[in-house]
Amino acid sequence: MKNLVTGGAGFIGSHLIDSLMNEGEHVICIDDLSTGNSKNIEKWLNNPKFTFILHDVTKPIELQTDRIWHLACPASSIHYQKNPIKTSETNFLGTLNMLKIARTLDIEILFTSTSEIYGDSNCDVQEESFKGYINPNGLRSCYGEGKRMAESLCLDFMRTYGTKIRIARIFNTYGPRMKKEDGRVISNLLQQAISKKSLTIYGTGKQKRCFCYIDDIILGMKKLIKTNYSGPVNLGNPQENFSIIEIVDLIRSKFNYKINVVYLPLPADDPIKRKPSVKLAESILQWKPLVDLNEGLDKTIHYIKGTL
Image 1 (cartoon, rainbow, N blue to C red):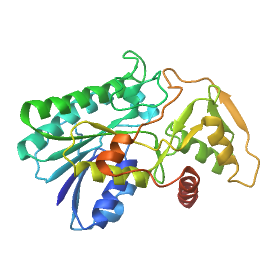
Image 2 (image 1 turned 90 degrees about the horizontal axis):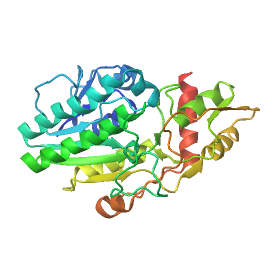
Image 3 (image 1 turned 60 degrees about the vertical axis):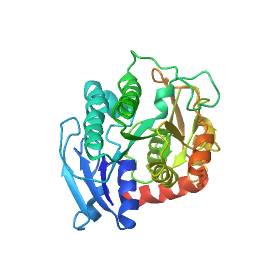
Image 4 (image 1 turned 120 degrees about the vertical axis):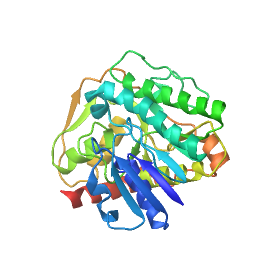
């Protein structure tokens, strides 16, 4: 099986490539390295089953593959807000280009959407049927609205051409290879703690998040692409539902020195609560997350310390 992975040098993409390569599959990795890191895939560069193409997915490309995993897009708020027009282009044009390949070759394409499309929801648990409550004019809309448009585009290709669509709505994910200080909670806090800096809490710290370890997300994606289900499917860990303050306390407990806390203003449109319903994933994929936050943090801390 030949797999095309866009954004393959990124956090989630490189873990997906590891999993596919370790199973003996062929992989074509496309990445423009604008936010991805070539070190994440360097161990595969001399493998005959691996091909790396330095390419911007907003530009058309022709190639042969059996399956497409479309992950290309900056995922952290710092990176996608840096060039919001480019983020919108990546979401729309990048997805359009990959859909055209999937249609031409009549193959499956898995699009990685995001929990951001739910916005600052007024419900305690986000099910796939929830339409979302998102600010279409805010600083984060290039990403959230971009992903919503990309989902719509995917389903229009399915309805119009019969393209084989899979949509994974990924919630907060963490683990080794998160970029340093990329704006995401776990990455920021662990980097600060290891460097003996004060931990930053935005807003009151009472806002809640659910965190899913990278290995569980990869397993969910691999199960999803093998189904015939074309609607969006949440992938996240509803059991790991913590306030930011609770996460800070847990991280501080893992170090044998005093770590201070600094409170900063809450960024615009930052959601107060986000918790996935994974009933659909449990039913269709027979999938549920297995790694708890305590174990996942230990693995991530070990990795970060090894890279410093």
